[in-house]
Length: 257
Image 1 (cartoon, helix red, strand yellow):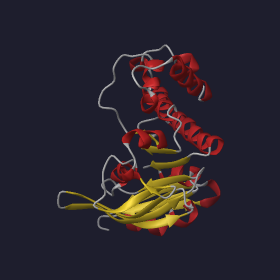
Image 2: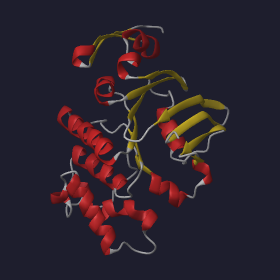
Image 3: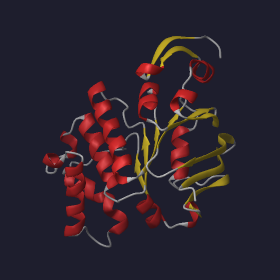
């Protein structure tokens, strides 16, 4: 049985169609990047998969069960969601922040076991020395690592990430992407992430979903999807794809596409 299936999903904001007939499957341990221009529906798709938004048509299935047949508590145990940005940050410690990810298991207040699990995850990602630091004192790269830790502490089977490398320097981008790859392989977690950086998508993905105007334009291995022809058509940008380096160089944009 397919682990995660998105089957004919359509979604609209009022009268505006945002997602149109989206179909794909994801297996355990697989890393899938969702790419496309701004407004192509990447974030909306992640929110539909997570059950935050309900599709107008179609369904999302986990092991044969539709996401919307599950309770929010059960959904929170299946999905670990890392948003692109947080509305605000309270000056709590890192360990206090991470333990909030245990919410689907907490009845009243976090227990010793919850804090132990939070510290265990911090140790796994090499951030245990930050446990008593204030969240507001962290760098951008450190905060992104802690957001991933909070998603992992619920022991999810699927990790959803919305632009996990945005506004990070190259060092932290590589650090985050290596962490995501290790999580997928070691924990056998399916990973879906919206990405703007096509080179990172090329290097770290098992499969890529390229979206255009709310539809899946192309889907498959990076070398089949991230071609110069596809990028020109979808983004309106001329590129040079260097397969042996798994690198995409942007050359120039065109006026109309």
